[in-house]
Every structure is written in C-alpha cells, then in structure tokens.
Image 1 (tube, rainbow, N blue to C red):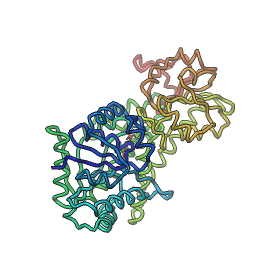
Image 2 (cartoon, helix red, strand yellow; image 1 turned 180 degrees about the vertical axis):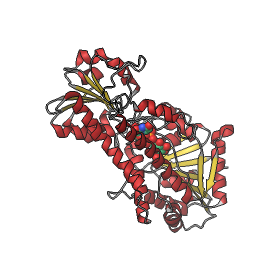
Image 3 (cartoon, rainbow, N blue to C red; image 1 turned 30 degrees about the horizontal axis):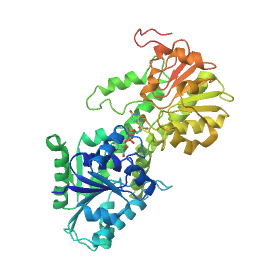
Image 4 (cartoon, protein in one colour; image 1 turned 180 degrees about the horizontal axis):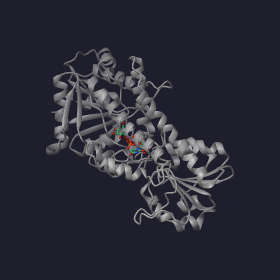
Amino acid sequence: MINRIGVVGLGYVGLPLACAFASKSFKVIGLDTDLEKIELIKRGETPIYEEGLQELLRKVLEEKSLKVTSSYREMVEETEACFICVGTPSNPDGSVDLRYVREAIEMLGESLRRVDKYFLLVVRSTIPPGTTLNVIKRILEEKSGRRLGEYGLCFNPEFLREGRALYDIFNPDRVIIGAIDEESGKLLLDIYKKFHGESIPPVLMTNPTNAELIKYANNVFLATKVSFINMVSQLCQRIPNADVKVVAEGIGMDKRIGREFLNAGLGWGGSCFPKDVKAFLRFGEELGLRSKLVESIIEINETQIENAVKLAEELVGRLEGRTISILGLAFKPNTDDVRESRAIRLIEELLKYDVEIKVHDPKALEKAKKILGDRVIYCKTIEECLTGSDLCILATEWAEYKELKQEMLKKYMRSPALLDCRRLYDPGEFKQIKFAAIGLGPRYVKSLSSNSEE
Ligand code: UGA
C-alpha cells in the first residue's frame, strides 16, 4: 500500500492535490523548481487564489503531513509514487509544448537510478494521445535504467475546475485510470480507495492512450456546449422577446442535455479550454482529420467578443472618447487566474476605440496588471470603478457584482448604462437606465416576473 506520495508542479492543479492527499493521511512531498514559490508555500502562503486552499495548506504544514522541496532526489527517496502536475502550454502552432513534462520525467528518472524500490509514476498533466507510451515511458526507462515491472506508470487525467479545485478533488464524478500494466492500475486504484474511502466514485480502468483522449474530448465537448449556447445567444439577439437564459433553462431540463455549461457569455477562456481545443484540432489534422466542428466552436468563441463590442455601441453610440468600467478580469469567478481571460480579450478590443478603461476585480488585479500594464486604470472598489463612466460592462460574474443596483450606477456614473456579458442581472431591475445583455432579443427590456414588454 502506497502511503508516501510526491507531487511535482505546485500550480493550480498540483498544490490543491498535494494538500488534499496530505489531509487524508498520506505523507506528501510537493516539488517545484521555482524557489520563490517553494519559500512562499513553506511559510503557509499560497501563490494562487483558490477557495479553502490557504487554510488547508496551513493545516497540513502544521500537521507535518506536507513538506515541500525543489530536490527530486529528496522526493524520490522519501516517497513510493509521484503525481506529475506540470504545465503543458501551447506552441504557437497550437500543438502541445511537452518541455516541462520531459524535464520532470528526466529528473525523476535520474533520481530513480539511485534508489532500489518499485516506484509508481502517475501523469496528470494534459498530454496528447500516445504521449505516455511513446514519450514518457521511453524517457523514464532511458534515464532510470529500469524496465516495466520495476516501475509503474499511469496516465490519470484531472477534471478539477479552478476556483472549485478542492471541492472537485474530494468529490469527482469519476476516476479515469490509464494504466500501462495491471499492477500500475491496481496500485493507483488503491491510492484512490484510501483517499475516498466508502465514497469512491465510479472508476474507468483503461490504457493510457484512451485516458489521454478522454481528457481532451471532455474539455472539447464542454467548450462545444458553451459555443453552442453562445451561437443560440447570437440568434436570440435577433429575435424580439427571445432570451437565451430561458432557452438554456428549457433545453437543460432534458436529462440528455443537462443545464451545466449552457451559460451564454463572452465565451470560454482560461488555461485549459483554449489550449486543449487547439491541440485537439492540431493532432486531428496531423492524423488527416480536419474537424470543421472544432473550427466552428473556436470561431463562435471569437465572435462573442465582437458581439459584445456591437452591443456596447448599440447602448452608448460611438465608443470613441467614452469611459468604460469593466467589472471582472479573471477568466471566471473565484480565481485570480487571467490566462486567456475573455474579459481581457474584450478590453484589448475596446482599447482599439480610443476609450478610457477602468477595471475592477476582487482577486485578479495584480495578475491583470502584468498583461494590461498602464493601458487601463485599476480600481480597488466598485464605486471607484463606476465613477465618471459612460458604460459599465460586467465581464466576469463574481457573486459580489450581483449586489450592483440601478441606483448605484445612477449615483456614480456620468451616464448610466449597463452591459451584462454574463447574464448576472435581472433586466427588470435596470428599467431606468440603458441596459443590454448577451442573448437578449431586441426590445426585450422587461421584468421577467411581470412578463410585460416595454
Ligand atoms: C476546465 C474543465 O471544466 C475541468 O474539468 C478541467 O479539469 C480543466 O478545464 C482542466 O483541463 O484543467 P476550468 O478551466 O477551471 O476547468 O474552467 P471551467 O469552469 O470549465 O470554465 C472554462 C471557461 O468556460 C471559463 O472561461 C468560463 O467562463 C466558460 N464557461 C463555462 C462559460 O462561458 N459558460 C458556461 O456555461 C461554463
């Protein structure tokens, strides 16, 4: 039974995973090559914002069930298995950059040479189908001098969502184990049995290639769902009285469809969907399969930005010379991550119009500054962000923005107008100001409860 686990890569995936294992009576060693990050974590500070993570990190550090290091040797000597959670960014052509995975496997392989024990390697980083068998296995055997049976290897995709990482780790829908041999699969399953106890979710045991493909197909399917509803939202905007939110509600009641991932908005962003959709398209092409479906979902995602700019123009006329307040910069609520954020994409587009932009976000201001620099004005409060503005755009649906009231917009803005790009608001509550929302048909300014059209 494996009780001592290493986690390589302490980012949005690895750090929550390391803390979660450590909280369930595993002894965990987290490894990262970024020494600043290691120092921060040692002091109990999380380098990322993730709900509940700070508290859990401090707890497991205090209990000494988690320790962190930058030494592979130390990790390999003190553990029996290791989860690889390093990033797999995109190359400029959309293919996957495996540099960090290769580096991690090389380092691990070299350290394995120095110890004499069976070791289980579990890859969680998203990698194209065939990578575990054709790349990872080869590097590992070359560097460690071992043969299968002296080590175990699984690809084990992760499905956690940023902002809900801990919840998803403790309550997954399923566990997918892509094992290179029976022993590897059995050992990993035992780890999950110990972790989840009685409430272990359904397990699918398969080969690494299927598991790799499941991860991509999963993300691409979810992105397709979002692009589908965004396409419907563009249609709704052309039909008086139509509302995409109600349409989503209706189709979502069909169990075969389901309500989740049918929220129309600015499109999908983040560190996963954009890169995984592009990679899926790319390795399909390499195999002689051109997917028009996947090309289309990317195109729809782009047109949602144009769609939002058009709605902004419909609301306030020419954009030139206007002051625009943007609420929300993170790629979605409850995270400080701004990678491929649609809010930032929208800002880049608006900046082409010679506008002044003021921005607010509860957690992501610092990370956004690294991208937007001095091209926008950063505001600490919502009031400050609204002051003197001609248009307020809700770009990321943080719960605290739900409190925004018509009176507040009237009080602080130069000429109050609200564009709801995430369908957070009830249009009926903004009857006295200019209001538009993605997926709301023309002339549809009405109270949803009274059903009366204005
Ligand atoms: C996504 C997947 O949901 C996870 O299962 C997966 O593990 C992860 O990628 C990954 O591959 O690591 P995440 O990127 O954290 O998780 O974010 P999501 O909650 O999936 O949202 C992705 C984007 O879609 C966001 O920009 C979000 O605003 C957008 N979205 C999502 C919508 O516009 N509408 C929706 O209905 C749902």
